Image (cartoon, rainbow, N blue to C red):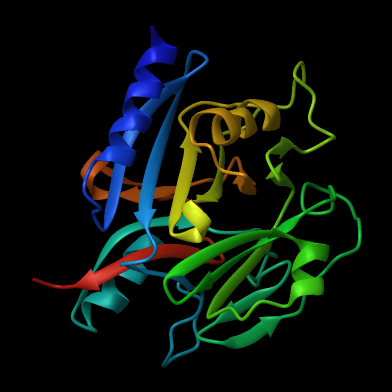
Length: 247
């Protein structure tokens, strides 16, 4: 029954008219997730890290909302978007408004970021790409915004080769996948601790995203007014969000 419900919700998403952000709660394999669909072709999807005037790290959804409100816009959706150091600077590649603030890191290392292959979310005008890092380096796409994280969840329709169905590593996790040739981005956060394998299967089998990227676990947060979500807690590094003109 839950599987049918999830399938019906996804079918409805694909059939319904495009909105700035369409968020709902989805059940998959007995677990609840908040899933937000973004029409990248028609909406402003972007990244936030520092205040453009003061240079201070924004760090929270409230700070981002205040920033865009001062620009005559409304924050429709937001989520933490990549791992960061203690000072909240990005661990890997980061581009904002076409300016690179952190270079690409392609080497293996400790922690989830170094669980290769990792990847990069690249936001262009009217499209979003999720690429495995070495492929990104080879193709060098132009990105207005970009953030690197890892590991990849889905690579060319296949799960990351290191994921184990019976893993006991569980956290509240979030990530992003793309479909429709980059015109649609899907942002997912689990309601309870899940494994890499479980959230990756959701992206592959239910959302049909050929590429998906893990953002983080344990500190994962969501801003989705339609769902009554405005998560607080520890300050964040990179944040991804959708903004639109205030009515």
